[in-house]
Image 1 (spheres, rainbow, N blue to C red):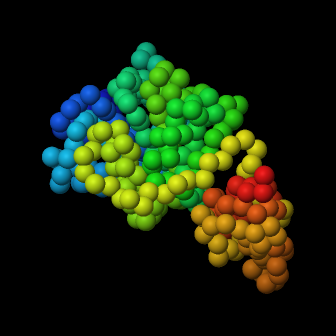
Image 2 (image 1 turned 60 degrees about the vertical axis):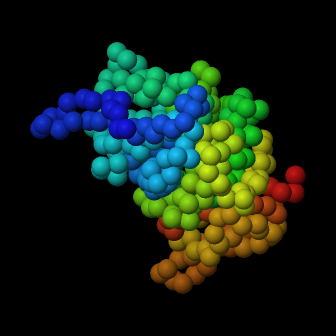
Image 3 (image 1 turned 90 degrees about the vertical axis):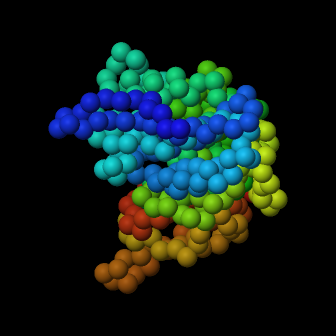
Length: 309
């Protein structure tokens, strides 16, 4: 059943709509929400929403709860492939929980938050930006570690990154929900403006596994659910460019690298000169790698979980 959460008239006979598709089955005491499209240039969640809905529709008899799918919290951003809300110069994930008496964007954020409140679980799906590729991971505020890590471990992801509270912005959807008692897991994966079928399928399997563990899904699930690496504190090393140039690498995120292993090179196409080798400072798990090759001094090239600590 498709329901409208927000409906606002726009110029030239257009309409701003935020909608969800709600699937009911069996015992409705449990409720899970899949949300994505907060940033219009992050598209991995589109395939996840499609696949979750498709599987439920094909096996309605196996559903034992309520599943709500929100594919586009920022539909104007998705339509124009912009991260923020067009014409408002706003990052939607910086204005939650919104304001019912505020601007259109603030009213939208408020209505979304109010609609999601009370769910047994919210999964907030994001991609990386155009510049970085991320392995499937869940990011959790250390204040919510105890309640969320066990659920994140059921999501079939590769990595769980527990952030210090000081690094988590209080205006995000996840913060707004978790701080009011509605558990929310933030998933990051892939690269901006693209869809990785493999990563999306991995997360879809994880969502059904989580639904199974919550008693919402009665069907069989993949028995090969991954056990993620759990990273906490200052165990992540950031590799930044020392010089401008073109970053070349053959490595993929989701691999273990040795101390001193070459992650890539920064080169000059004009002179065919290698400016520098980019070496791993530790033995660790490479969970972020540069996807966009043009770099400047200070550009982020990779993130590595330090397995030596």
